[in-house]
Length: 348
Ligand SMILES: [Zn+2]
Image (tube, rainbow, N blue to C red; front, side, top):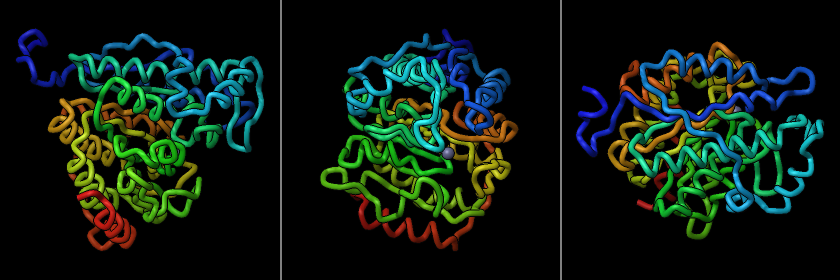
């Protein structure tokens, strides 16, 4: 079946959007740092080998107004003044001369992809972004992140009239910045699985949002060592039912690959197949509630082999709906505890 003969309303699984730009490589560490340009070289291989036709989004910088939806304008000003300089903003987070422009380009290009997803006809996408974003707070860069790409994109979708946006964050670290930005907002559901205790220290199961946003932050902290079975169980018992009940109109995934067994920074034990399974399951939910609109947005992942393999598997799972089956860990205490909190507070 060619694209021309796909009936209207049917999701064309052979096409996908992609954001990538060589300028993302110009965010360069000072000396050795795990968040390095070679990471994008690895995920680009996943795009090359995917069985899909990718349509490139024209990259563009985020505007001040787009950033101000989630960031303090004074922070954006401060960051802009660092353009042309190089140094460390905190012990983890560096800027090189072009980093601030690159960060604006990453956030803006994801905004452009969200626009394309909303406007159609291709509902699914992959964003190969650097620097990553989910630790960036309203008024502070943090954890390798300068601007919170996925939060800027979610806020843009809301401004375009999208009623409910879900962000699923399977990066091994808790996305503290994203959580903070939508803490009181029932229109952006934030669901995170992450290693705990671990950097950045947030993301306990009892962090559930406040005021109108209560219940719309769902945290699933998992003990170090958890692998495919633990994640499949956490998804089946918590992540997927919550997203399904929320019925988002747009699903964005903070797709880090640092929960991989090979990752040098974290201690989780995921196989590449697990990312395909998670993406397949989320893709099904996006198809049923969000007209298929779903994006994989690169966050962390610091082993180049695991990064490429994980991204390949995730793209395949999302686009083709095919993946390996995973085992289950029905007695995992971390999953059980998080499930109690999700049941207690999730607006059922
Ligand atoms: Zn991470």
